[in-house]
Length: 414
Image (cartoon, rainbow, N blue to C red; front, top):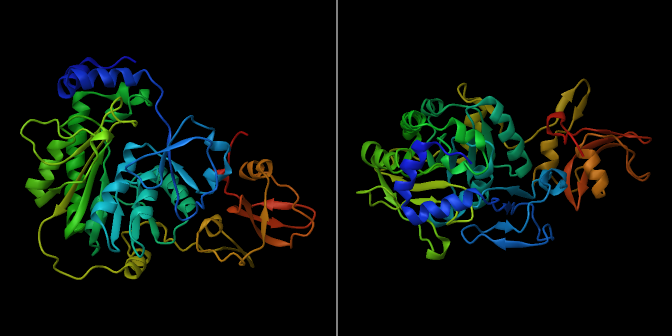
């Protein structure tokens, strides 16, 4: 891998000789694959032949090899999510600092890994707003959050300044901000080609603008989790200092085990607790995370979860893609159930007839093929399952069954 000389000069000095050598060695190695099981769907059945727990995430595991996830129906059913081990540290952060139901916002959420983790780690009764400003990426986020299947997740497509114009006050905000992507060099050559010092400085300015825009929406006493997938102190420690000193926050510690090999601050004169994952030291791609608590006393009561849902449904500034309560679609005189209904964990098991598919049938279904269901299957809408996990709907016509899986979700090649 050809690294930019400016990156080498800066980062080698930042890491120190030993860390830098570990990092260079890691760039020539295959990254370790990790997954996180969805606690709302996973029931303990064997999925992978060999796995090792990720110690900072309750449902996270490293795999001994990377399977073809595209051909696994359980992946499409939302039973697990493929996610970098470093980003799973968010689970440990939330379980450390959040113990009662909250209204939470994941501001830059696509493709959805941290959002699916947030809803799993937050206490029951919490509501999560999973947001993505980019519309194309927002559609990917919507798919992944619907597959997660939890009803208390709202998916929105807005910019940070839009939330500042509402009366929402969040107890927890995750800002996994767009960054220069240094931590992704091993798996994304495009990030290497796009890197420059000027882009690092541009990213810092954009990150600070995002933070300033969303800061009024964080309740005094609430938590802001700041995260990037880059190494430099410009986008990391300097921005954390900006939040603490300019916006007004206290940097909070998170207990860690020395065996996890998580690196703290690398900026001289900065003594706040921050957490940096460096490939070669930790089994993950690069990640930086810090936790801050907003200073001040709450000036008004919290926006209750039910109120938050109604607020999102009616507020003219909020582009709501899903309110977490999927409804059928009216086509002429017929109501067509949505795939989100089948995937939602609160769908009553007797709402629709269910048909269990074999692995081959499940893959054909995800490929949007039509095929005949067993003769005893009632006519009408049927939930098809694989290993008892719903995949979506078919409409059984007797001699054949129409496949209702969304076109934009379908597997392109078997």
